[in-house]
Length: 153
Image 1 (tube, helix red, strand yellow):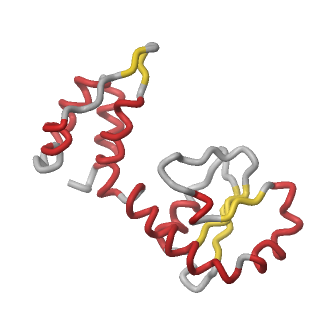
Image 2 (image 1 turned 180 degrees about the vertical axis):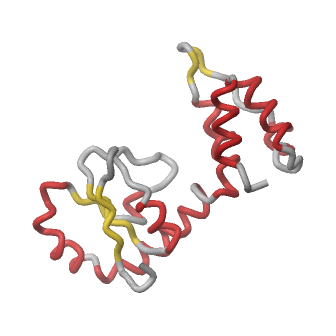
């Protein structure tokens, strides 16, 4: 993959594919092949990937050739986006950003306090983070947070 200009990322069983994130991590521009893929709002995808509709697959070669001169720029932007948004070290930060946007039974949750946001990851105990998420979101969110950060702290 390191020697490639692009990485083809067709949809998997769902609407997306882990190959997108693997490509971004390697610094290779992902070529997203899915009509119904829902992009994350964390990333400006047009700056770090190519998106090709499934019906345009017959034109894949010409599209890639047309964008060959942008491949290095797209790959570097993809690596940067991965590091800022999806790297394991940044997942807790992204979760704390997402908490205020989560709606529970039609009511929006209040965001974490500034002191919490500032001190959360100075304290590297899983129990502290678990207690916060359990109090805010219940056991399911706490287990999700624990799963996502397992091994990282």
